[in-house]
Amino acid sequence: MAPLCFTCCAGEDGGRSVEVVSTLAPGDESEHVIETNSVHAPPKFEAPAKVRDAEPESVVGKPINPDDVLHKAMKAGPPCRKRMPKVGDIVMSMGGKKVGHDAFGAPKRWSLLAGQSAEVMEVDADGDFRLRNLQNIESGFLFRREFCFAID
Image (cartoon, rainbow, N blue to C red):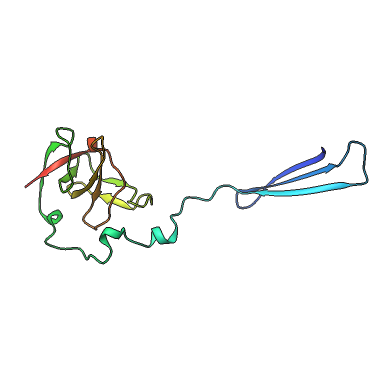
C-alpha cells in the first residue's frame, strides 16, 4: 500500500485525527482504501472509583479515635535514619507538610502537616515505611530520611 494522502488535524480535546488514503497497488486508481484513526491525548490520572471513594481496608468503619496516640502533642526526636523503624513507631515530618500517594496508589490522598505525627504501619528492607495519619489514611511507601521519631 502506497499512501496518496495523509492529513492530521488537532481536535478540540487536544487529540488528533489521522486520515490515510492509499491504493492497493501503485498505479491502480480503481480501488481506494480510506482509514481514519483517532488518537487522543492520554487522560489525566484519575483513580478508579473503588479506590477514590473507598478507605483502605484496615480503617474501614473505624471512626477517628480522640484517644489515639496520634492526638498527643509530641516533639521531634532523632532522625529515622538513626535506627531501623518498626511497626507501631510514631514519627513526624522533618521539613514541613508531606503529601503522597495513599496505600492504593491514589496521588495526593495522604498528607501529614508539619507538627503532626503518624504511626508506622509497614517497614521494607531499606527501612522505608508506610504510615497512618490522623485521618486514618494509610500512605504508600515513604522515605524514612524525611522523618524523625516522635517523643512525648
